[in-house]
Amino acid sequence: MLSQPDHAKLAGIVEHLQTVPYDVTRHQLYSAAELYEGYDPDHEESFAQCYDSRVYAHYIALGKTTDSVEESLARSLHDHGIHTGLNTFLHRYESSRYIGIMGGHALCRTDSMYRQIAHLSKRLTELGFYMLSGGGPGAMEATHLGAWMAGRTSADLDEAISMLSCAPTFRDAGWLSSAFHVMKCYPQNRYISLGIPTWLYGHEPSTPFATHIAKFFENSIREDTILTIAYGGIIYTPGSAGTMQEIFQDAVQNHYLSFGFSSPMIFFGKDFWTEQMPIYPLLQDLTHTGMYKNLLLSLTDDPEEVIQELLLFRDRREGEKE
Image (cartoon, rainbow, N blue to C red; front, side):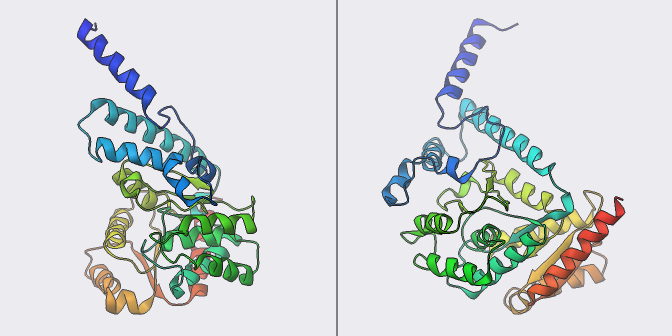
């Protein structure tokens, strides 16, 4: 039985839930149009008034880690609803077709690796895979740009990358508006991709090239979700601390066969993964000594090798279900 003070507390919580700038009853993923509602690409300053910016400003004002019970509940309800929408989305397609690409958020649009990731993602999307990433800039944006440009020519994709090069990083003026300009020049509604960003890194704009966006407040939930649902395998491109964390978190899931099977861990960029950041030989050594089991490791500079490995794994997994 609730006391009068308890009733007052509940009333305060309900009032807070009604005043936050995000929908705590939402149970579907965002689209770029929803996330950037209020943003006009022709007026860059309008970014500060869009839905995504308003939510981020509220998030920062109350604190990334808040002592407010009301705000904590509101964020939890929102993230629960996004999870519900994500589960609905995932059940539409065969799980072995979800492919993750991990890599640095600081990767410039003018970098050759950006172009390689975009072209690889384009090919995989055309082959029936569904690409997913952390939904931000850099390697993540390249992933979704490639998926967006699926069905078009390689020359079209190169032209799109050229159009984006006016703003090489997300810190450059025109980064977001140039993306919307590319989408306007190359409209599509056939191919999909999934971005999973977070307001924890809200200073990094979410890429609008992702057709479906699961944006969370809690980054720990978001990180685990990305690695979990990439059942078809993960491609690791050059990155820094965040990518390192993802590699070992993924390795643990595969080691323990957390979901009944192990998925490919493909390291794209031989020099980076063996010399600059020698994670690959370390994982090989740990596998050979038995410290890690069940890891499906590969290392390559060739996009075709990546594609063939993912196709073989997909065919094997889908064949086991027949």
